[in-house]
Image (cartoon, rainbow, N blue to C red; front, top):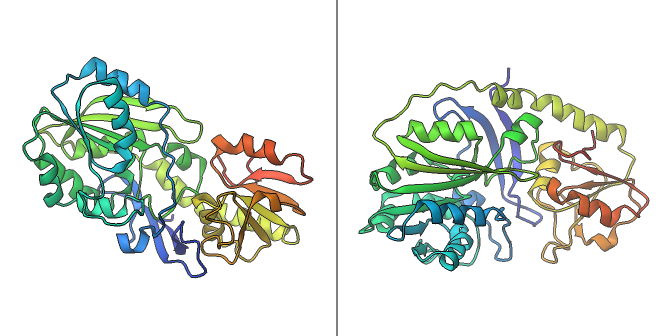
Length: 367
């Protein structure tokens, strides 16, 4: 039985250069915290992006529903504090719909002087009491927003302990994370990359929060085609729970990795004389090529992001072209999330080639 998934020399997913930064990744189920997470010793220098043009697309279609929850449950005397820039869009919506005392902590607050996005440096700083004290000083009755950030925290224990020290029993913490249950049960290994340190499900995050002395006052699940959004509303509690958890799904995910590795490499060995392309030069394609060691096969990489064109897919010698250059392929693989696949397939279906997905959660999966 395997105890971990070990990936050697996984490149930073947005280092589009000939010699990207490389990390050895060990993914395993943490028996103490009872969550699936990266065990490797990573730090901001090893994973922080150097790019200013990158854009993040976190799900937001459900924000209006959350605003309605604010209207029904909370009063105007709360101070709303967004811990990272990922709370900005939601806070802006709150300001329009409800009169509340709001602030979103920006890079200036964290003494970050460049325009590179990413939560790597912020998660490191915000785990320290120095910043948490500044955030919570002289603020009564608070709602703390942690939107799509907690899965990036390397030292999540330190953060939860330190944050709890500065909270009152009246304060409310709003946490939203992507749900990884589909990935785990569906054996999607393209979702593994260095920026996502923790891989939560509804149960594992709930257990983690309870074990650190928080109580869950509300939970909402917002459905998305690819990954659901898990929304927890929690308060500080004086009771810490010792939770038991059966990690059969996480253990199976780890144990089945070698089997899926062989299936994928066997497919490409049998079809090694064919010409392959991948549309989408994001972290799914980077993980797919590098985790399954497919650099030796005949791939063309396509992406219509002008900043990526002419650059290397991280960890490979494959140059990225625009989709207008797609021709002469036997198989085009879709390397974007399944919720965008249908529009991509419609765009290219007139071309004389097979179109399949690299994502095992997709109905168009190639195996």
